[in-house]
Length: 67
Length: 80
View: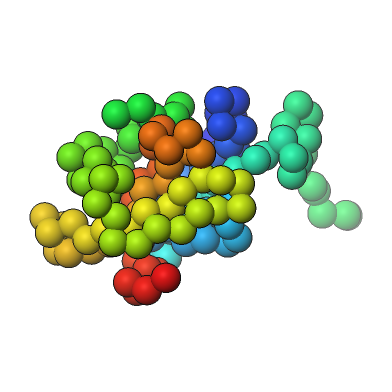
């Protein structure tokens, strides 16, 4: 997974796979989702990201199943 | 053609690199449809003959010249 922030336009791009987009759809006016030819989600573009999330803080964790 | 860093980044991938600058400039200059977003950015659509007459959506910043995004819009039915 790759996350890129473009400060000139306050745009956040989350790329789940490196596949090519075959279809781009609006989730809302400021959010685009892109899908490959098989219909798999490959990326999400979020505009005005700093107003919608905390772009200065990122955390990642993997959750293990309880024994 | 002025472009944003997001546009330049997406252009590096094959799914966008084949979209010609001339097509984008054509849509900007000759839109069949236009919509102003609530943030002032502009969406324009026009058919591209060389791409089987599919509608190319171009998103321009509110400076009315900087291209931010361009993609063939499968969801656009030609009405706004």
